[in-house]
Amino acid sequence: MEQLRGEALKFHKPGENYKTEGYVVTPNTMDLLKKHLEVTGGQVRSRFPPEPNGILHIGHAKAINFNFGFAKANGGICFLRYDDTNPEKEEEKYFTAIRDMVQWLGYEPYEVTHASDNFQRLYDLAVDLIRRGHAYVCHQRGEELKGHNVPPSPWRDRPVQESLVLFERMRKGLFAEGEATLRMKMVMEDGKMDPNITHSLCTKEFQARRSSYYWLCNALDVYCPVQWEYGRLNLTYTVVSKRKIIKLVETGVVRWCTHAYTDAAFRSGRHCFLSCSLETGTIPGSSHSLLFGDAASLHKPSTTSVRGEISVTLELWVLPQVGVTVAQSTMEPHLLEACVREVLNDSAPRAMAILEPLKVTIIDLPAGARRELRVADFPANEAKGSHTVPFSNTIFIEQSDFREVMEKGYKRLTPDQPVGLRYAGFVISVKNIIRDESGRVCALQVSCASSDSVEKPKAFIHWVSEPLRCEVRLYERLFVHKNPEDPAEVPAGFLSDVNPTWTSTRPVVPVQGRLISGLWVQGQQSDNSLTVIESALVDRSVAAARVFDKFQFERVGYFSVDPDSTAQKLVFNRTVTLKEDPGKI
Image 1 (tube, rainbow, N blue to C red):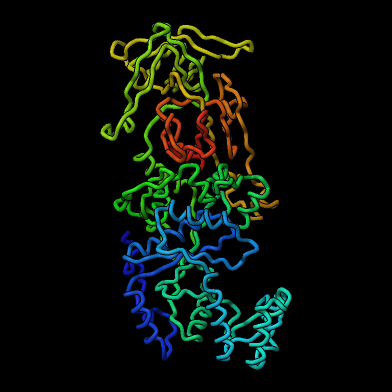
Image 2: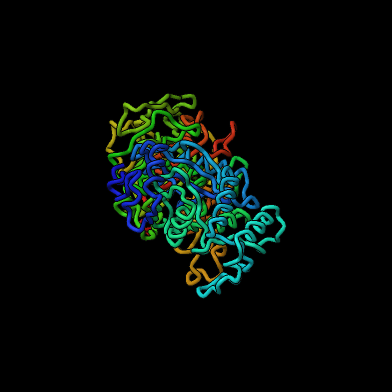
């Protein structure tokens, strides 16, 4: 949190706007600052001003954290102000999703406002600007105003009264779109009004508009906040553009669901949408962590959100590495994933799940034998709770935990090598291999011995007994190339760079090579953006899980409960693997 305090960022104190380099001081500045302090009481005030015409992405997480976090760090308040000035592209689902994402990241707006709330006030100020001789109605077309050598407007010096009459006609809709424009006599950029905001925080592309922002406020003799710019956050293997994200939705690459979240959205680089980060279980604190640093500052709020999220506020490490700087920053996905793992390791209870089941019958145990085993939710801290799992003579293990032919370095189950069962206190040895009609291994019969009575095995594996059937979605990067928007890397455009999706509808039981989404590929790893396993198995301890609850499936990865879950079948999205694949760094 210290990295966001005003002194650390070298920001001005409320009321001391004039001390900022480049701030324009007029004869009325000090009086306006005095009146501003009377309204705010010297409190830091900021705002997050999104346009409700698209889906928020990872770059918005930086803006949300910076605006809300800076205000919070300095004992101030932050407004959520919708910049709803383009009704043709605005939809209610965007308003709702933006508010949800702000809350998911751990913040509550002091007040929700809309630019449209001030349309009459803005119109009155525009009229005042014309009367002061600082604005005029112009008829130059948009195409004439492009480029560096824009011709001067022949209407710049038209009489004030004439501009007032034309501006009223504009208000009544008597001109065609683009036929008439109100232009300031200083610059062509438009300024936006933020009354009573002490710090106007925005990304670097708005730096060119700072002069017009100051000019407009001063021309109208209204309070002028200080504008501070910071670099945009980009992420490799994804797109950070609302327009392109909407294109992904429109073309069916990802889905925008009625509940305002994208169930398959994490496929878009897995970090492209903020809503996809929610659905795949990314902890809000991990994005705070990535963006702002200092692990010692992590804390849990007094309540959890309706989605079962644990909002961890603002801080783990990238202020030291990326930070709130003027320079644009581009980050690798594995940095965010490392923060996710760090947070989930302490917050996601353990469970056992089998993605590629292989049936195992323990012949030493009677058919009706059954016992309940107590398993710690967090093995490193058993005081945090526990759950029970059944253990019987029929269990299921991962197909990859058995190999018919021993290979160098392989430590799990083979016909000549026993393996331990986690938490069960047993070591099993293969007695019989059962094959299907095609000759593939479909089941094993094994004997068991107490782990105390035999030599310690080289490995212990997870298993399930009397499990629940569930669906598991394994997400990888949506795009093949590091920079899918770069024509040099992807000449055909970002939509051509999307990885395919595979679905496994039935378990397959080969024991050599690797199973990929129902396809058997010898020695090859899947890079599919989404792999759906429809018949995975999970232990019954998760039966009461709610949407967005998170778990660590032991030896598999971190998972979150998807909104597609039903009372009959849970659906889990993989948030992140247990360890980073070195090949992806």
